[in-house]
Image (cartoon, rainbow, N blue to C red):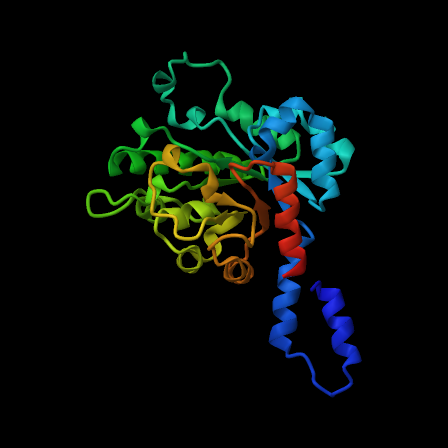
Amino acid sequence: MKRRTFLKNSAQVGAGIALSSSMLACMEEHQNYVSTIGLQLWTVRNQLEENPLETLKAIKKHGYHQVELMDTEQIKTLMPLIKDVGLAVNSSFMNFTLLTGRWDLKGESIPAYTFSQLVEDAQKAGLTEIVFGYMLPGERATLDQYKKISDRLNEAGEECKSAGIQLCYHNHSFEFLPMEGSTGYDVLMERLDPELAKFELDVFWSSLGGVEPVELMKKLGNRVHLLHLKDKMTDAPVIYDEGKVPEETFLPLGKGSVNMQGVLKQAQASGVKYCLVEQDQSPDPIQDIGVSMSYLENT
């Protein structure tokens, strides 16, 4: 039942039963995120390639208010269409190798384009968040590598902060792989400067890595700046290799085992700025983003 319908019906009961302030607060908190809810465009990557305008219109029709770019390159290629449709853009993933520097692992030469130019382009486009979202296996094989990238992210975060942009780290499940008596994510939590590099927590991937997202959010506190909402198949095993996750493991919100209500409640307590729906794999992405939105609106 939608909040407005619930309140209307409650007022008509006439039994003198008042809604508790905590219940109202919880419902209001939920609606705050629904009113700005976004979609990570990776969810509809194939549809965007085939028909970008109609895909963006479908996102808008399903009730989404903003989208998160897959890469800052889409500032030039896609943002004009996004704006025309009436969707906001606040955050974008970036080419992670601009910070790791491991072009050799991609078999690519060092480009002339720099991270500083990326920050400048993002600032001109009005972005408020840049997301570092991946590392290749050869960049995360040891805790020392995690320490080095943490230090690099702090440097990059300072540059972003000077431009009025917040740098965020987005996780997969590989960060939770036990390693040398710790994990890569532990290193990130210990080493990243809370003001310069915050977290975009992906609740699916943390859950798949064996870490309950609500408890992780409590541990991170106000360091969780953005949130990726996605659901996980019930009884899915712990999987650290993101390339070995069966497609059916990814589900629309409300169809799996992630404690989404707990996540949304903790999001408010942690001061999360925006929540964004994402579903990496789907037989029908447009239909599934509608299912996820329906869950958020009617729960």
